[in-house]
Length: 323
Ligand SMILES: *Cc1c(COP(=O)(O)O)cnc(C)c1O
Ligand code: SF4
Image (cartoon, rainbow, N blue to C red; front, side, top):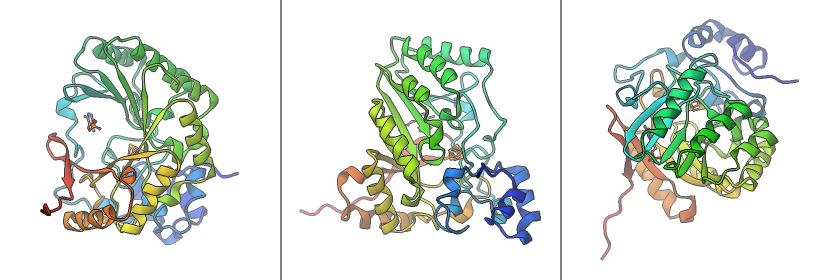
């Protein structure tokens, strides 16, 4: 039986890293969490293929460039109460925990996420939910973390029950890697809890067509059947999806699973992620090439997080007008 790999030793034993890299990978693992679920292991061919590269730690993660910061999206100044980030007038993030099914090597919250980090206590969660109840300008709650679908169905039900009882909450949104990276967590109990009168949008994170296995397909079909609206979010990553064919396959695969691509993010400058960077000029060239190849349904908005907390900005591409 395969299990989630969580250490350098386990990666070496599974043949996903060479024994010679053990000491370096141990040093990486001290600083940044590691987890590779059985569902993801089944999608990895080689360590540096488009799936392996996203999850298998690498010695380069210890090379921190001067412009890389531990809070690239600058959440800290926009935190009115623990677990909440309020940057835009009409919507706010609720981060009930900081654990994820897998730990992405390029993660913009990598200094904060981890298996035993950040579960809000009952009192902290209640205080955060109270903040939403007394902030009527906020009509959309975005559950993120970490990964909210790591919560038990019971705890998720508690959170959604409380939010749905607030009259000014019109939209629920969850950002998650679970449907693709750990689809077994989409249980019948979780599906029941996600079925709500209040519209619930699930923003599914995936970066390559190769990540979608048969179990992911089943979980996505079930989520759609439960009345959840599926959106896609991806990150543009060197060596993973930085060519037009890979992006086309990714977005077409999302459409095939009833996921509407929503955002393609430029990489945030989190520590030790430089090997994933794609220069802006190259990114815009790729997107220009892609636009003529795919249906508008497959077309996400390409955004970058403005350093210092300015929020997400669309980056283009722009076309010269042709009249
Ligand atoms: C990304 C983000 C949102 C959601 O932004 P949308 O453009 O609506 O997807 C909301 N709050 C914060 C703090 C964010 O970083
Ligand atoms: S699932 Fe999201 S929050 Fe978790 S490590 Fe990956 S990118 Fe970061």
